[in-house]
Image 1 (cartoon, one colour):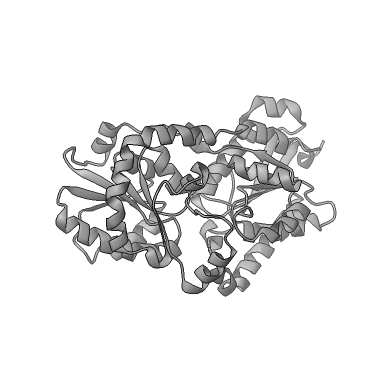
Image 2: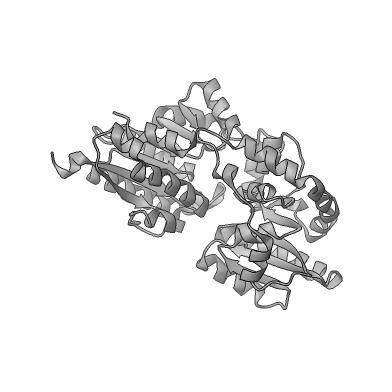
Length: 386
């Protein structure tokens, strides 16, 4: 038996930190679980493609920095079309050269669908295309379902409503569930000690996002809010977690001009949220993380005018915040585009603080909703397709 015959070769493409965490959990199960190893002929796995620090810790040598493909909206991908297309083509060529057995695209659906399609159309290359994290096809641009059905073999869904949607349209999927279903709130005293924070202060977490474009559009308004709110509320400190050093530097550059009671730390999201009275969050996974850590949230979102004009016309859902979508109601305030102002954030504070009384019940309800088949079940299906 040649080395190729005994090695499961996996191509993986991940473009952001939340996806990096999900991909790492999945690969870890494929790599280490004895039940999976007993099911198939492979003694080990090789990883190729791009990912973040957690996937790289499992043996992936990224072809380039995974943030290169982290663009959002409709305008940014068009402006960066040539660059993104060249990066995509380089990955497709790599996967064909390495004759991968499985391709796992994690989030970044518009970038990954091109790879799924190319590999599907390549003779004898990768007949097992997996997409981890469903595109928001249930919420907007529903015409994408045809491409998904034609080029993706299995979609691993974080949420049950996504899984049900795919059942209705006849696309094979697994309700993976979300890792936040197992999220445990950090100990407050330990967090205060770790970051040298005062026990007699009140804390608000401000989450500007995990992309440079989000920092650009969101952080200036958050800073304006902090400037005004801190003048009238001297007992508050504002906590800003940065996803990585690059974003930490970007945030510091914008904040260094002001003397504000702000603490900025890398990779401190869960700890900061766990000690905060409330959070002000750029819409995304962080809004769900906040609600599950019993920290009521104000959900905000702003992009450029063209992006928003197009996206708002395509939306098929009433809410954009994940906790609101799961709860089926506008439980947490959403401030979108022109409504995203320092004045509206201030107005939303009082009602959001009142939600603290019911935060434990909401957190439990959301965690129950996020339970699925789990990474082991998904890894079994993915690693033994033949």
